[in-house]
Length: 89
Image 1 (spheres, rainbow, N blue to C red):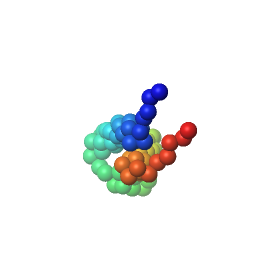
Image 2: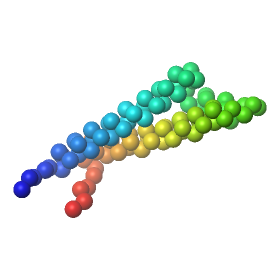
Image 3: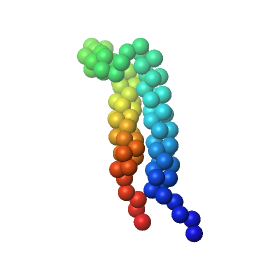
Image 4: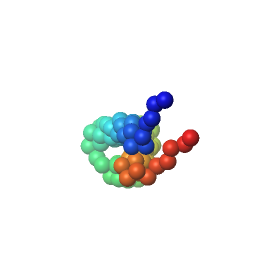
C-alpha cells in the first residue's frame, strides 16, 4: 500500500493552483496590454462611454471574470500554503 502525506497532497494541489494562477494572470496581462490601461480605468471608460463598443464590453466581462478567478485562486494558494485544508476520505 502506498502512503501519501497531507503535505505531498498539498504540494500537488498547490502546483495545480499556481498553474491556474499563471494562466489567469497571462489573460489579465494581455488585456492590460491591449488597452494600455489597468482594470479600474478600463471599466470606468467602458461604463461611461457614450458609444457602445461590444468588443470592449466583452473584454470587460472577461477581464472582470479573470480578476475574480485570480482572487479566488490566491485565497486557495494561501490556504494550501498555511496547511488550511482537509483531505476527504
